[in-house]
Image 1 (cartoon, rainbow, N blue to C red):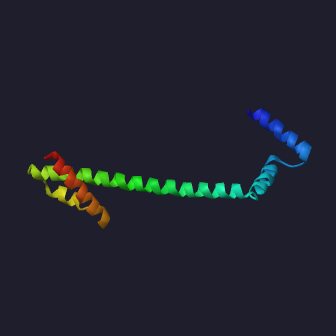
Image 2 (cartoon, rainbow, N blue to C red; image 1 turned 30 degrees about the vertical axis):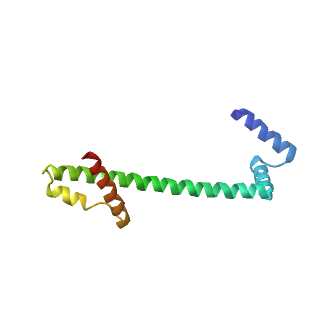
Image 3 (cartoon, one colour; image 1 turned 90 degrees about the vertical axis):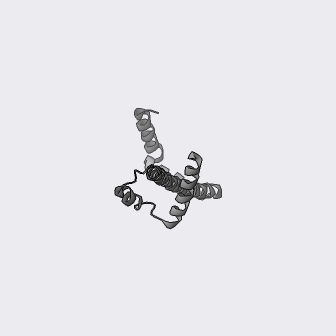
Length: 117
């Protein structure tokens, strides 16, 4: 529907029912909320949105861990090559931020380094 058709439909609703499209939409929404299946579907959508948000947060956390692991691996590679500077040590101390992440990161880097050998 283009904007002209929408305006015509709104005008017809006003003439036939004596209410605006917004009022009609509110009435329809209120009636739909009375149906149990609509309530259930709404609840399912809210749960799905919550799950998607959690997954996005997990992906962001894994991305941070991967970035940290990459930096650690680069630092370890420089250290093995004798090129570890004091600035490298101080930058390494800035991450990871959580103790549990440090354990996961250490394990990841250890596996990564063993892979290169």
